[in-house]
Image (cartoon, rainbow, N blue to C red; front, side, top):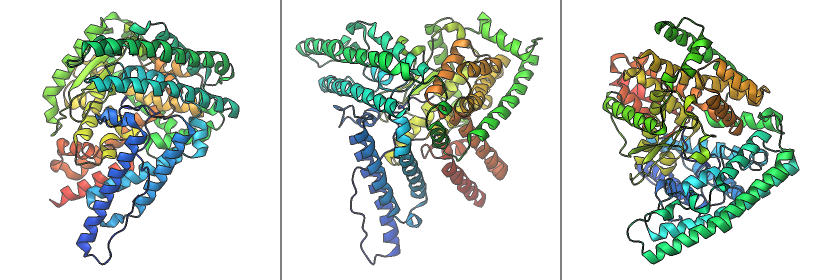
Length: 605
């Protein structure tokens, strides 16, 4: 899973204000065509600049610190009004450009930008915002989980200069306001009858309690002042320690308690019992929008559910083959229980997991040139989740580095409840989160200065997660799944993504309960109870996000087969992967058109 940005923050780039878009009359055709490309590039630049002002965290993730003293809003009605106005203005500016006069690369960029803006406007419509903005926090997304890591010295916020430390204090003060705004939005939802589930609300309360149990000096917010870089005077260090402790003890913690008390006393009693969107007012309409938003395709919940059931059946057949290969005599559910409980399949410690993931990474690094012609320059760090959030996280996630390499990408893995973790699944998890999965895809896009910023740093879930799931399958090409238990580990993870289609749509369109969803996952895989519970609670918190993995991967796999069938001996996997990766995260329809054009051009040679 890519945790480059939260769903709270994953808003499309937008233009703050219109600007003149006129062309001189009576120009030669070639000059006019050139000007259309130039106008498009100018639009992209203006859009990105305006977006960074409205969403300063996006800039910090990219290493652009011009607005780093600000955290941003992301919650209030005024914020969403500004986002909607910007998207409307820039879509109008885009449509003033003649697409037919653009070069082929810019036609792709035009199509992606147009799709992004149209989809953003759907999400920013009053009908959808009335169902989303009034639920600003759950246990999987929200500033209360994102911000502690971001501001800890281990996240995206830099702590290299005195100004960095001062900027962090200024962002803390905006964070205090954001908590008040979040409570206001929750109250709006209570008034309109659009509320979170009791389960997600209780989880948020637990998360806040876990952070409040720490002294200010133990808090991740205090961590940056426990170790200073060179160049910061002793006097400034003493002052900053006092100011950081003060803002934690007298600012952040009181606001956390205020939010916790509100959720426990006022919100939890009216939160809904049913965990799926089908139990929420307007939930059916919201889920239909979310399916299209995350998959980039006009799919229905019923279609997704049936696709998942068919994939589960297919993967089960391959698991049966592995079971026979290792000589296991029992049933497939008994084999699941064997892999789930036998200590040979359990990691020994956090430190052992870290070391093992690095070993897998070194092994993959040697093999990557077989399938890829371009390797990202950004380094990759591997770390366990912090204790305050590990219980509520999935098995792994990725946080992007900076384009200049000054901050590495980070592969986070979950070491909570070690007996529930799977050694056979570690190779697959690395391929997904590290190389050639998220780390490759996101880093290559960010490092490609020829792309407009929205394609370097933006994306859609179907492409991003679809690529990472496709990358897991490259383990066969690399020869990493020769051991049957490693192969089972891959199949078990692929089964997870197939089950997500069934479970997510079951929860949000078919009235499934939390317990029903957990049982389905335990019955069809070797997942442990802890992992299955965390997965299901994730789907409850962020509906539809989990659908994108399989939908995106199946699309890329189909395009690969189409390319191989059409090109025969001319097919080179390195060229195919470059076509997929080197223009950023494309919607599935745009990606298919690009591959079709590539096939046609290769046939002519």
